[in-house]
Structures are given as structure tokens and as C-alpha cells.
Image 1 (cartoon, rainbow, N blue to C red):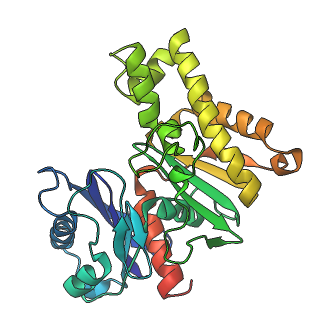
Image 2: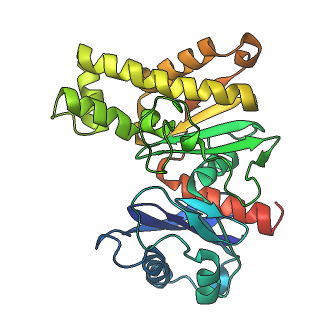
Length: 309
């Protein structure tokens, strides 16, 4: 059975794993990429971590069929480089991920955006199996997205497509975004937007865990904040439903475990906000693969691109 090296480069850590041709993760590891405030270029850390991982797992390179990389940022998947990022992420833009890893391991390499890979992972072995038209959204520090239409990942001209967080929902009166524009959806829909609003009410509400605990306890202030936040998420999704007419919207990120307080209200609000024909048959639920989605999806992207699976 074929085995692949899956690498998922995030803003804080790189996750590494061996994934077989059925999408099963056989072993995995993780290493920080911001241990020195990104003074060490992220790609240098990834290359070192990848070599150490294969050595530690005693996996010969010749046993592997290829390397699939999922990476945060705007990824030019045609060239396998980091084309751009938002905000302060030093020593990353321009990183030639594909060329560097091909040089290190002598294996074919593909590179794609992490949210695109999350969506593909769910399509392959997760919550979107059997679906052809899917919007995957990750809520976290920002908002990432991947769009499957007619069974194919929407990538655009350079592989940069599906950058849902920078869909502008408050273009004329919104808050500035790290990308330089105004009113981007992620400034309202990211988990950080909820935390920012909550901390203004109570300094103890410093993360999603504390906020949802207060909501479970019935705190009216937090429940009002959650209501406003899920409104923002739902309105962005409703606009996308009218453009892409998906069968399924999958919501990922750490907060996606909150079925009662997050997933269910978003689903109800999206369906109430779209034209009836678009709501018919539309499913909205939490993603299933969690931390493995990126590396699994990266391998699926490799198989689709290099092996035409």
C-alpha cells in the first residue's frame, strides 16, 4: 500500500505524519515554528523537522510515494511557494517550499493552502465524503476557507482561490484588516473577533474556552456576544451560499466542537437568510478530522494532482 509524507505548516507549529492511500494517519508528530519569534525562517524549521521525523520513525524515503504539504498563507500551488500572508509573519513570504523539499528528499511535492487542504481532507475521509459541492470554513485566529464545486477544488489562476476570510462584509464602514483592506469578514467572524469583544466586557474572558464556559452557565452578556458573532458568521456564509449553491458547509477550528452554542445557531441563521431554493437540502455541520485534516488533505491534493486519483 502506498504511503505519503503529509506536512501541515501552521502559524505556530508544523504537523508531520505518514498517511496511507486510504487516508489513514499511520504516525504523526509536531514541532513549533515560532519558538524564537520566527527569527529562524519557517521553512528552515520545517525542513529540519521533516528530516528528524523520518529518522525518528525509521522511515526510509524510498518507501514514500510523495510529499503533500498544507501551508498557511496565500500559497501559489502552481509554483509551490508562499505568495503572501496577512499581518506580521516574518521570514515566510517567498518561501520555496516545493523546491526545497524536493531537493531534500528527492520526492515529488505539492503545496496547497491549509484551509483548502482541510476541505479536501474532509471530502476524502471526513464529514464531506460523497459530496461534490462543499464550502469548508475554519474559524480561528483568522478565517480560512476551501470551496469544492462540481467535485473539484476551486483554486483560481494561481491556486490562491478560496480566501474566504477576506471577503468584505463591511467594506464601507468596517474595521481595518491586517491585509490592508477594510471590513474583511475575518475581522468579524474569526474566534479572535469574539475574544476581542468579550475581553472588553470582562478581562477574564481571554479565550474561547472561558467564553463558552460562561455561555454554558447562562451568562446573558456572553450569550448576547455569541448571538452577534454567529450573526456575522452566518451573514458571510449566506452570501457564499448564493454564489456557490453548496450541498454542505463544514465548520472547522477549535470552536467547532460547540454544537449547541455555535453550529446549530449558525445553521438556523444561514437557512433563514438565504432564498428558499438555496436552503433546500443544505447541510451545515462541524468538520470531523480536527488536527489531522491539513496533512490528510495535503496528501489527497498530492494524489489528485500528481496521480490523478
